[in-house]
Each structure stands twice: as C-alpha cells, then as structure tokens.
Image (cartoon, rainbow, N blue to C red; front, side, top):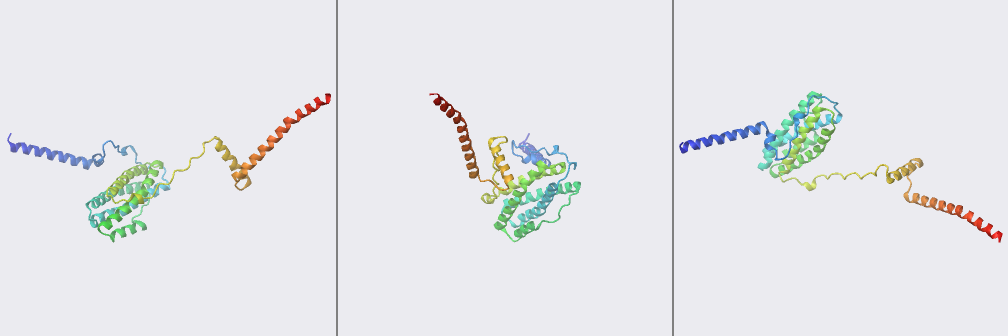
Length: 274
C-alpha cells in the first residue's frame, strides 16, 4: 500500500469519527454534554397524560414559564447583535435556542390542560428589554447578565415547589424539564464572570427549632398559653415567677406548722406530769 493510499484511508476514518460524534450530539445532546458521574433525570419515566388535579399554582407556573420565553428569546437575539464579547453572544444564543424548546413544551402542556397563556411579556419584562435596546457593548453585557440571572434566581425555587407538590403528571414533567433548563441557564450566565454574587438576595434564616413535644418546656409553654388565653392578656414571666415563689413559701410555712404543733403539745403533756 502506497503512502498516498494510507493517508487517504486515515482521512476516511477521521471523517467517520467526526460524523459519528456530530450525530451523537444531535440525537442525544444531553448525553454528549453531561459531566462524568453526574446523573440525568430519567424524564421518560414520568407520564404525560394530563391526569391529576391542576391547582392554581400549576397554572401560574405554566404562565411563568411562557413569560420567561417571551422575553428571554428576544433578549438572547439582542445579545448576539449588541454585545462585542463572543462569550455573551454564545450565552445569548444558547439560552434563546433552549427557551424556544421549552416554550414549545409549555404551549403543548397548556393545550392539553386548557391553560390560557399570555402572548406578550409583562410590564417588567418589557422594561428590561427596553433597557437592553438602549445599551451596547459592555453596558449591554452587564444589563443582560444581571436581568437574566435575577429572573432565573427567582423562578428556580418556584420550579422545585411545583415539581414536588403538583398532582398533575403533565405539569410534573414540565417542571422537571424546566428545572434542567434553568439550571443550565444559571450556569451559562455565571460563566460570563459578570455576576455579582455579593449583591444577590440572601436566603431567609432557618426557622427557630420548636420545643420537643411532651417535654417540660412544651408543658410550661402550654400552661402559659392557657393562662394567657383565659386572662385575655399576656402574663409577664417575672410576675409569674414571683407568684410561684410566694405559693411555695406559703406551702412550706403551713407544712412546718402542721408538723411542729403535735410535737409541742406532747412536750407540754410530758412537763405536766412532773
């Protein structure tokens, strides 16, 4: 085999590998982009029959997903036009393309469940798009990242609530898919290195631990609460403490007198005999 033939054969093999890799990305994009060891949710295990009660929170969730696409798709298109940074252009393109897919999902779910969806962004979202239209270059980049990161931060916990509480299987599947999209978008936005994490809203403090049921503290709290409900006004703890001390003192005084009186009478009787 000549050298020319060997080179030609190697070129054919390389082209075949490239075609196979491209096909894998097109057919299974999630599998191609998944990090090693990170499991992907098995979406095919969730039914999508429309069965189950649709709560008002479910309807509101579908509306929010639709609204997200109505402003983030044009925002991503503007990122490709108004940004000078290749990273921002790529982030905008990816987020816009993924929202097109997610928007199709929510419209199909809404048709199945007879949920009415909006056809234009809300007032706040229109204001954000106006900000972006008035900006260019680095100013646009910062506005784009700030607005989208804030919006995704708000809807992310809402998706988790719906995913874990809905009774409807179509909404459940939509929430699971939306969660994957939003997590990806958060990561893309943060990869811009323009997110000011110190300026993000802080999580609320955890609730104070309640006293254990059946314990002494719980019993004391119950007694105080009963006393308050009967009197119609709260009882001051210092006053309650004084009352307890006084009652204990009276009880001690009476008990000492009861025990001491028989002994005194006996001593008097003994003395009378002598």
